[in-house]
Image (tube, rainbow, N blue to C red):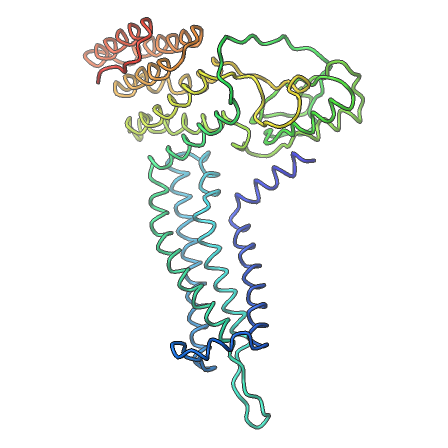
Length: 439
């Protein structure tokens, strides 16, 4: 249940309605409060100052009409621009990046600010009324509320300027890659906080299997919930899948070691898994790696032919590989005060991450002399920070696989240049030097 709630909360925060709804509710409450303060004389101090001109009903209406009308128009324009940017980005960089732009706080908060200003102005506008001498009604102009509406308008102008700068900046490919790369590096540090001093051996699987009953991608795993179950029945739970894997009925999710598994317990265990129609980067490092790989593959495709974008993706991938290669890869994506001896996640070794990243780009990189040379450079850059012999050997193997592919794709001087680069790569990796390959 906790896993489903977490997945629901993440999906809600990534939507374009959550912050506008939150800001609209806040604006409505603020309008009620400020109008109440105006009715009870709390704003009389405003009219006692000479630098404040007291507004009349007609002037107040005009100001509020202008603010509300312009804000709803700006909100519509902002939403249209945002959708156009999302469509452009997903078409240019891949549909996998759609979630990144949907989660952009700048776009969400900009839209929310304009809608909240509109709602506040409309709610204040409805209480402005003229004086009726025959009825003895002096009329009512909420001076404090009008001042706040003017302040919200000024804030909206600032937000509009920010938005007009933010949208084109956010769809630049270098900014997109930086956002993915930084998030990937943070995820690696959070998931694998300890340095690794020795190679790790995985234990053979054991235990009674528990299979899935639903279909979809594993978005969230509630490790704390699994730990409570394991503590209650005094058993060990070994996961057979990771966040981001696709499951369907009868696919094994986990295995229970040291206890009998009945139908009720199996349902409790399945309840710790949240399934959805798409992957989520929350617990899924591979999702972020796949985004970098997808951008690099699109850039190296014959229709686009942009090797320098692929090189930037390789640089971020190399930085992530360097961090992964220096860390203890045991442990799940969530860290908490529960026993990892009771909950054994599916541990992916260094080879898994290299194949997922560099292995995914290898065939496309081999078709471009520029990308192939930088591929070797990034492997060397990652290997220069890794001390474990087995992991350095895996990077040398990846370089050999690239050359085997490049010999099939390249010819003439281009191949000679990559061959020379590869010789330098082997010499540097063998000697353990930390120098990058010459340009």
